Length: 402
Image (cartoon, rainbow, N blue to C red; front, top):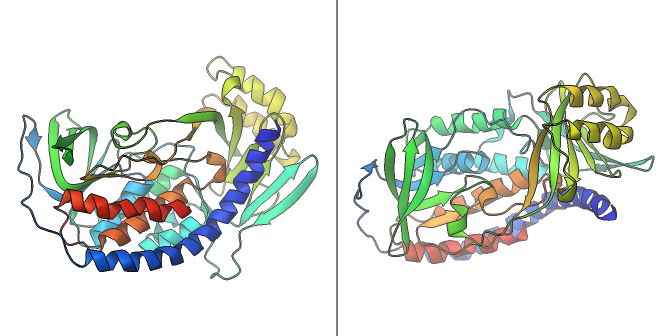
C-alpha cells in the first residue's frame, strides 16, 4: 500500500504546487500571448458561413457552439459572451448536477474565477473557505497550508456542493442576451471535408436538430461521447473513489480538510457546507466491493472506520449505514492527446483528467477557459477553420505547464 500513501501525499503536494504553478504560468502565458496576438492581429480570410443542410431541422448559426454546460462549458460561454461572441450552449441536463466530484476549488482556481469575473458564483451556496489540509498518518499529523501570504484575505480555496456552483455559473450564462443555453444531447459532429461545421443533437422532445458554427468547443466532461473522435481515447482507471456525506460533526481544524494516509485506503474529508462533510475513500480497482449487496458498507465499517479520526467516527458509521448514501466513481486518468481537427477543440475533463485526490480538476478547467478566451479575443473572424486550428494549436502548448 506504499503506492497509495505516496498518492495521497503527492496529491496534496500537487494541489499546493498547482496553485504556485498557476501564478507562474500566467506570466509565461502573458509573454506567449503577446507574440500570438501580434500574429492574430493580421486577420484571417473571410468565408461565407455554412448553410443549413441535411434532413434534420437546422437552428440559427452562432459564432461558437459549446457542448456541455458544466464548470468549463458554462465559464467559457460566459467569458466568450462577455467578449461579444454569439454562443450556442447545448447541455444534456440543465438540472443541478448531483455529483461527488468537483466540490473542491483550490486557491489557484478561485483566482481564475476572479479573472473571469465569476467569483460571485461561490456566494450564496454555503461554500466553505479552504486554507489547506491536515495530514494524518500513524498517529502523527502535519498541517499543510496554501501559500496565501501575498494575496488579499478573500483569496482562499472553496469547497461546496458541485450542483449549486454549476447552477450559479449557468445563471450567469443565461443573463447574457447573445448566448443561447438549451437542453439537448449532442449525438455527433457535422463534418465536411475534414472540417467540423457544427453538431447534430436531440432536444428535450426528441427532435433531431443541427446547429452550425465556425468553431465547436467540446467540454462535456469525462464521459463525453465525442472525445473519441477528437483525441487519443485511452483511459486508465487505477482506483475508485467511494463517497458519502457526514453530518453532525466537525473537522478538527476550521477551514482545513483532512487526509488520512491509512491502510488499506487513503481517506479525504472536506466540508462542502456549514453542516456537511464529504468523505472520499480511495479503493484500488481490483478490490472494489459491491455497493448494492452491502459489501461496500461492510468494507468501510471493518477496514476503513477504525482509521477514522475519533471526532468523526460516529458520524462516519451513521453515514455508511444510511440507505443510498454511498456512491462510487472511477478515478479516470486521461492524458491530453488531441487530434488537431479544424473547426473543433476539446477542453476540460473531456480532454484530460488527473487523479481526483489532487483536487485540481476544476482549477485546470478554469485555466483552460482563461487561456482559450485570451487566444480568441483578437480574432474577429473564425471562418477559416484550417488557419484557426493551426493558431489554436498553441492552446495545448500554453496549458502544458499545468
